[in-house]
Length: 285
Image 1 (cartoon, rainbow, N blue to C red):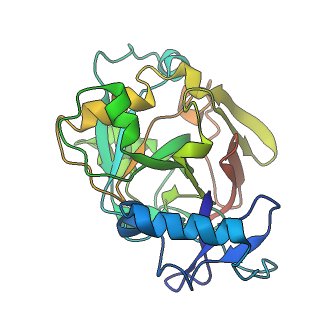
Image 2 (spheres, helix red, strand yellow):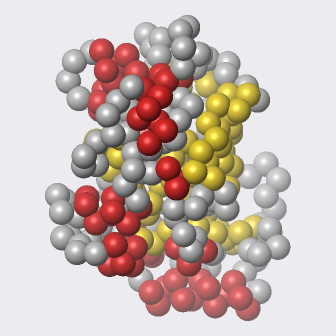
């Protein structure tokens, strides 16, 4: 299933994109799309049955805002330097273990919402990423099979980053990762049954119409299954938690000087095969 949330910010309603591309209203079946729903097999079954029966009302998508596909996110765990080609372009050694940092849940916005360039920023960068959404409580997972069984679905994430804040201002990466609007998510939460192999997904990103990133999750240093298993050794993952799994080559940081960092007025578009497409205009904070 392709689950999404539509409407004005803070007042989104749950919806579903059916096989014919029609937008269907889920608000009569479930109150929202969040960790509580993803952990409830019976509720998900009701959604699937209603969709298959053609019982869901059609929504007029014209002019309707698409919000983040997941409400009440608990935490966003991010994996750094997780693509062989990205490590090469930045001159970094591939890590021996996954690099973990965090984004606050309040950085999440809709897939087509405005992204704000922070005040004083000179190195705002783009990063298309596969987001993994957790559907079952995960702690000390032992195998890749067990890890994937805890995944509810997948989504497109834009891990917007400010490289000066991240690298040059002291402290951890979090300074350059948690500026407001720095995690557009969606348009859909695609349930795991529709993604048979998360290591066979194409990722693309364009800046002002120019293709900048063109990669594949096959290039990941640590697979989705390994990332989920590994993270569960250090923290409990709950339904509705999100893991951003890293970005392929092509970010501004990895390009020759003068590096083409983002400025107000730029337009970024990104997509992952089967998971949908995003478009953001960048404006000053």
